[in-house]
Length: 177
Image 1: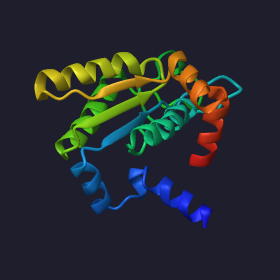
Image 2: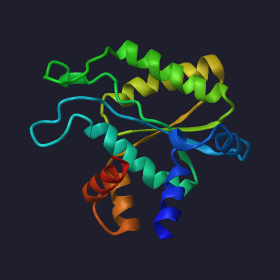
Image 3: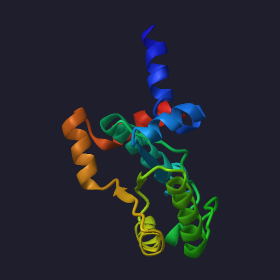
Image 4: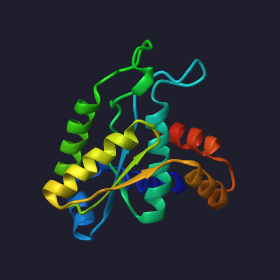
């Protein structure tokens, strides 16, 4: 029975497993949406290509429970920065990344959600998201929030959950997969 309750609770925080009616209720209640934004790039020989995406998704798992938020499907493909030439990296330009993230964020806001939090641990995404948010504020009067999974976030996780971020990220990424 507990497994069923846990599975239902997990379904209620993932937009990709919710119904349109459930999303409409979340919107009516002024609910927060979380958008994990990563990158599909080389992470040395020790980590997988989706490390940044999985880290953002793991952080969203924590935030969703803390903020009663819903997690949107992740954006995996963004400007990789210096890792562009490495085998396997999907390297799109900063301009393409800005245009795509701008389109996604605008579409979410146009759908009536006013509380959008973009979560990213990929370094180059900070400057890209700054341009996305500036454009949205200037042209649309809307402003999503950016949360980076930095040292402060990892310290918060350790303080509240009692273990370091690497273990939490691995655990939550394994649950997601």
